Amino acid sequence: MTKFQAEIDVMPKKEILDPQGKAVTGSMKNLGLAEIQNVRIGKHITLEIEAESAETAHAKVEQACKNLLANLIMESYTFTVQAV
Image (tube, rainbow, N blue to C red; front, side):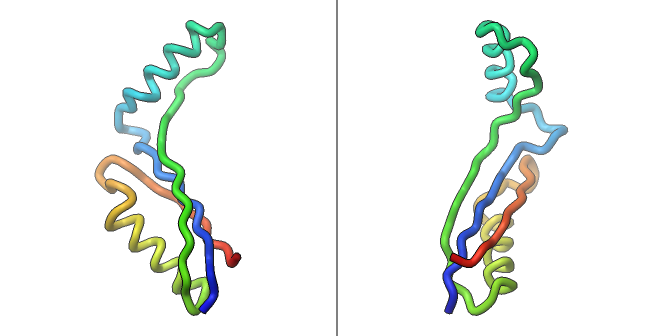
């Protein structure tokens, strides 16, 4: 078995309103940073997994994202898997 590390980014879909991102965007103007716009807030998840191959690790992370880590109705995700 080899140990792998996954780096996962979960973000609200573009067509979904992001109230937290909108609030941060508004605060940027108050801080004199009006040139920063369209802030989107998401989640960054790291995890370790033991698997026989990179393909197996990739499949397990995919399953975790689809079934638990991301709400596929409102969020999209991307991830990378590397041996450690």
